[in-house]
Length: 392
Image (cartoon, rainbow, N blue to C red; front, side):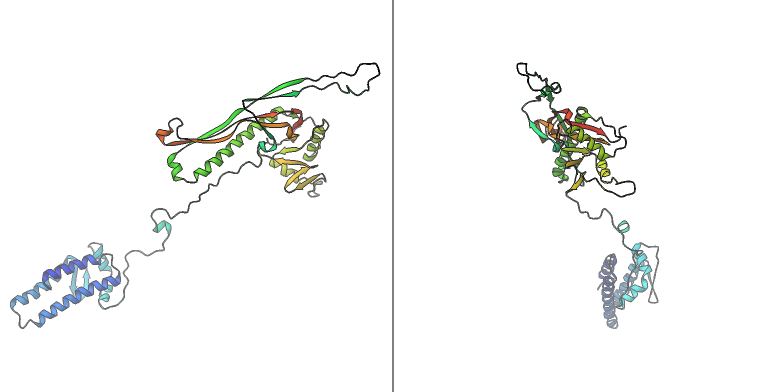
């Protein structure tokens, strides 16, 4: 090994020390040491036979080794490494662990401390976010417990107005209560009719979202139709409830001293007194459950009257279903023959998507629209009673 080879070998050792483990460091140091020792031994054995040139090579070899170690701020003093720690991080590492490096040469295992050791945590040891698992379904709001249209029938028409005749007055009371006297006139009766128009209108809404959003969120395809449908029925329930509240017959009973069951029984009796067959009672969920919690008497525990039954989760008063709906106004109720009402449909519920709405094409947007052209026909307003549990 000539001086150039030694210089290259030591230079390579310096580069190879970076990032090496103790075992790898041990291999690198030993290999260079063995190479140098072998070369020096060979030259010494030939010293007696060599010329001054060979002795010079030995001196140059020793000088080259010492010069490169000096560049690393390493001094060989009595076989112990003394290192100036003001050098670069590699020198600091050697300074801190010079004894361990010496042990490596003696084939002993050492551990070099390269940083302060601590427990690994996400906040201390992780850059960026931890891996995620994404659900493919949105945790959305629930649908209405009961939609208005579920209580009534439907009439489909081919235009925008549904017209029906309604009898408005009755014959004189008891007009036919007497038998005809021989030779006298029969009793005469007459009936008045009114033509009632129900105009259908659009209940509609839309939302606009980007094409990129649709591509990046695959669940949007199934999420939006369900949400738009739920929003539509929220609107239809609100509108139909308002129409019924303004069209139904107001309760006339005195509620003082009555509980909610007794109040509803009075409304049933009133309607049956005019020959209507009551088939539905609608209240808020709060009133529904408060009815279930009615006590036999104060402190005597719960106990519904015998005519009130809970059948398969449906509360019934004398067999009449008591339905709960969140579109009913707080403390209000409807009692009546719901077969006398119809949902009138000119155009059924439809959901459409378009990229041609306004500037959607240029902005890469999509418009989703839901709509229906409908109306509510209350054929007999006197067949439905609207009441208030808190009325005075």
